[in-house]
Image 1 (tube, rainbow, N blue to C red):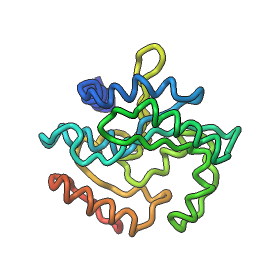
Image 2: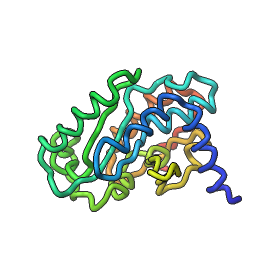
Image 3: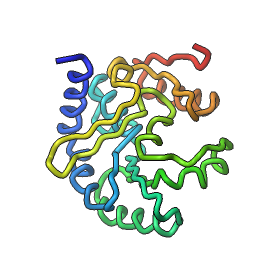
Length: 195
């Protein structure tokens, strides 16, 4: 088994030991007819919590579900899925944040001051997430198997390395995220923006 396959299996094992994440994965497939990923921070922080001996939900402020529907870019269409998700995930101990990645280019410049072209796919969106470790999505397929998308691999995640993915994130946003994470997981190695 290659290192990449071994890390993928380790990630799946960590996910499967987390009741909150498993519940989220089990229900997420019913949320929308579109493919989805649970992604970014909640997966990364779940792994870091396991590796550093912290409680499973330590430091997790929300859980991100992303999907891609470029046939209807209206706020109303996305909000309908968000509201369905609020009902579906109401009893989970952490809020669930649901976003249509096909719409991100409509609101991102106003919120973060950075223009971006519309994403071509869900994977294209994940390719631009702010760090190499957090550029990560996972979903449970209908056949029970796992789909893991990690364009930069899983090595930084399991080595507790925070490294910028400069595709979209600004230096100040990366630094703020790195400082926040380092305060919660002092074991992290933060790679400077200039490196």
